Image (tube, rainbow, N blue to C red; front, side, top):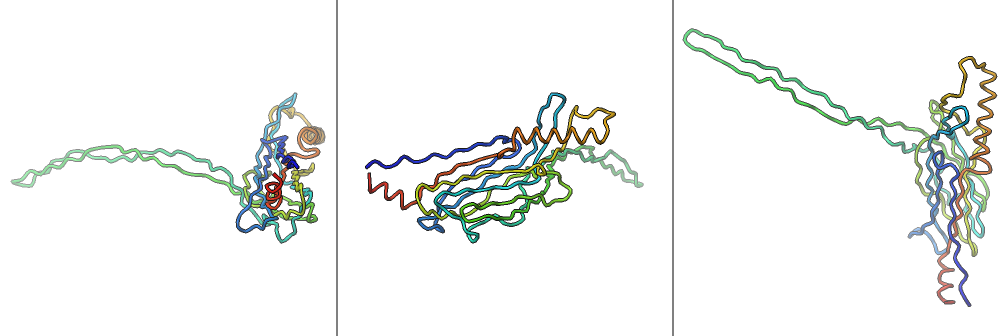
Length: 253
């Protein structure tokens, strides 16, 4: 009897400049033979989108990561990443250069029978250093859904920031394998309210009314939804090969 062929992972990021998703499976000493740890990589960023009459920059204020698990389950007790996160935003590094002036000169002083002279050199010393400017954007993560259809909700928590920007790399959950094949399908989905336009170039005429501006902005958002959001932004299909099934394959072979 020939062993059945192993399924291969599939990954699709429709707009990686805005949102990049990946999920990896791993095992360690904290897992049983029927468990696999899923590790999440999720990167939020702003993206420029070119239009016939200009361009816009947009990002996401939130979204949902939904898992559909075939022959497996994730109870609430095995879910991680359910708390407030400080997103890892790259730091802006500025090279600072300045100079310190050391002044001097030469002077003679006569004291009756003695001449005293002193000489001080004038020099300029360059001083350089690096200053780092960083931002912290807070993301609240909660979970919901059934054991075979768990979901994680991501929401912006920093009031002054329009969109999520930064990297999340974290353990997501433990999947209990109930049969073979065990396959995890992960999708990141967003709604219309999750899309936020942060900048524009060449879009608005100088005399445009607020009503016309709102209509054009709504049409731009619909274009972004059709292009990147519906039915999902990113998808990963990850087959999980349980240890007990690998042993069975070895016995068959």
